[in-house]
Amino acid sequence: MRLAKVIGTTVATAKDPQLTGSTLLLCVPCDTDGEPQAGGEPFVAADTVGAGEGEVVLVATGSAAREAAGMGSVPTDASVVGIVDSVQRDGRTTYSKARR
Image (tube, helix red, strand yellow):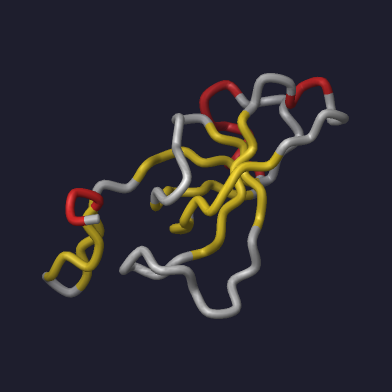
């Protein structure tokens, strides 16, 4: 899994039928402070947890993305599988949703 920040949504009216009903979030990789990584390329991830714009999330990629919340046959290689409450690194809190 990797950390990412939700920066928007993606709408696709023409898509694989198995994606119907899925919210597609536009995400960018972020650091442990919850800030977008310099040069991080935005990517689209299927949302399985109800995340929103501005939230720091956990993203599963590859075949693990399809294991999330019944996504077994959905053609995705990135799924949002968690909303991050806090990140601790080297004994200190580097990100806290409550402080944002």
